[in-house]
Length: 155
Image (tube, rainbow, N blue to C red; front, side, top):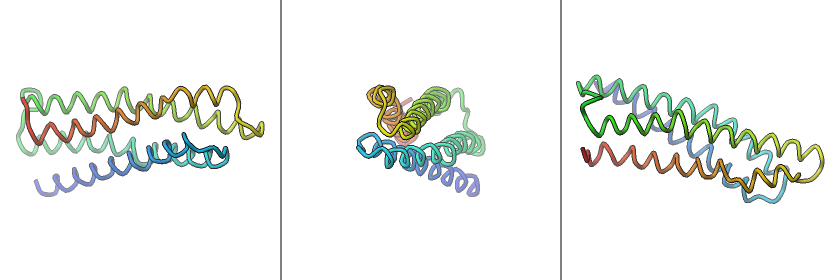
């Protein structure tokens, strides 16, 4: 049981590191005026998204269910654990893909703008859309909810 707990904590730190490594460059790029720096930040965020955030969230979910199994908890009838599973499903199937799509779109438009030498109208529209910012905030909120559920066990 101690080994499974250790692996789960490593997965949690991996996920939190992925959130920070991905969202901080996104937020900085959003408010950066220099196009070259914006491209570097968005490329770093895209790489961190695929290297840290996605595997971290997947590993957290898998090791969390493994840890619940080792503790002999029923994932369905334990209300707070079922709610955590639902929030994780929301993260993995809705929030993360939409963050990735928005990030990829802005990055490609920034690279296209660099070829033209100035910010294009499409890039300005994509930056005004704020999709990666919104879904990044929703991911952070979902992590807070997933932290609150096992601590207070409301149901």
